[in-house]
Image (cartoon, rainbow, N blue to C red; front, side):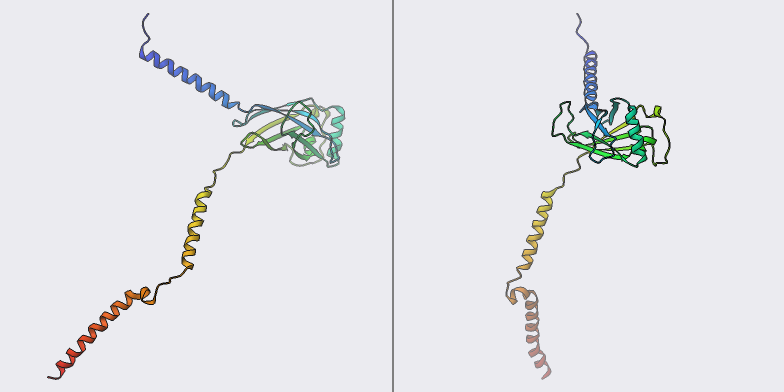
Length: 237
């Protein structure tokens, strides 16, 4: 059996590298996959009771890939509650557990937000949820917006309130550059040392400070003194 040529070996190596890169890219594209339970409240009371609305499936934070799946459509009673809440200019509230789990733990932490119930009602359950994450993948907050920008008292049919039409966006904050604090501290130390040195003053004697002015003056005076007798002698002839 003939040994494979050099070109064949190089081609196989390139194929293996391409496959590895594709696998790595696929793994990175769907990093941090997780499911977040979204709960909402249709109560007018600020101490609201929440029920499950659906689940946000985060496929990739870097690629902003996420989707929403509703738990179930609004029941007849919930449709009436939403309509009444909108009529009274109440607030529609949602929340997401920071650490989502199927286990009911008593110390769950939530991020929450709200909007006018009439926005939800008049948009016929057409909204957008935005979830923000920190660099470590922890949830920072959630916000909600709707296709309705104002409440005009529009009547929405019961059929249009059956299912949620929800879009999801996810964003991950990026750490900024770390400040060079050591260089700044060194600069402050140098400035402080120069300031201290200037405050110490010059303790040299008067001659030590101004000798460069005194010596030329003395030399000039000596030359002038020696020139005066010669000038006087010349005048007596």
